[in-house]
Image (cartoon, rainbow, N blue to C red; front, side, top):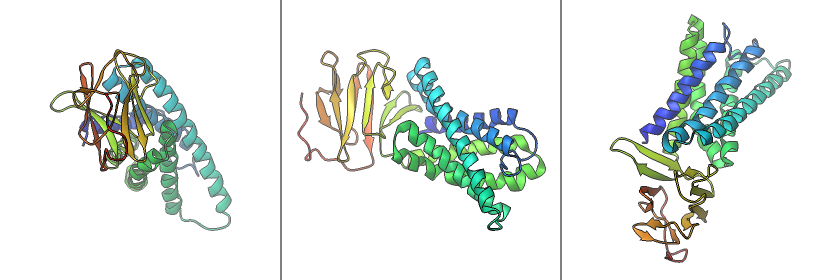
Amino acid sequence: MNWLFFFIVCFSGLFSGFCTWLIAPDGNPWNLIDNFQAGLLVTGVFCGLFTGLVAALPIVIMERKPGKAAAYWISATSIGLSITMLGAVVFVIVVNFVAPLTQLPSGVIRFFWWMFLSLCLSGCFGILHNSMRIMCRSLMGLTPSFIISGLFIDRFFLAHNHLLLSFLFLGAMTGFGFALAWELLKESWLDEEVSLFIVFRYYIDGPEFLAGAADECDLTLAEGPSHLFLIGEKEGIHIVEALDDEHIVKINRSALRYRVLVDGDSIAVGGRVFIYHSKFARTRDVLPEAVA
């Protein structure tokens, strides 16, 4: 488990819940059927802040790139706010259309609302990473988190007018479920051991993972060329390829142009060392051997 990632995501959830509480009106702001405007407001603010913080905080802490973090925060917040608010409008339209046809208990409507909200928020992360895999992984963590926290909000917190506790509990559960799903369902990643207790983890989720000094890279380095090395995926196998002739990339202490990665391989760039990990067995027999 990466406790730094857990702390970042749980803090994002708690902070999002606290900020949403500051602008939330009294009553049950999550009941869109009876309180549409308030429900639309808190949905957009909470999901937008959570998406933006999850995207930006790791960049601030691990890469120390405030400009890149700001760009990621704006992009992620915009997507998280717009998609979930649109989803809330669609949900209300569907409920108002179905309500005259069948008498659905309020508990069933609330259950479907929390499930639909988790689907919308998971879709935001899928759009941000351009990956259906990321959407499904996020959904596995967010769905039980929203259902459990929603049950407690409806039955206990708001029934006793504990509005602040309801938002903090929702944020904590959202962050915990999201972080747990990402850690348990991760497939391939790079670890950089900063100290005995702190490890910087970079998830390799898409078909390409780019490292270099440019802000558009998945891993932005403090110095060097704009694009230094690339980790690509081919038939489930990751290959690391050096993209710059002047700067040396060492894989397992050897300067190589490209190499098929297996679990435990080290990638040394300057004074930094990244350890590649994967949950799946890799073999070097499928592709050509490493080339210097």
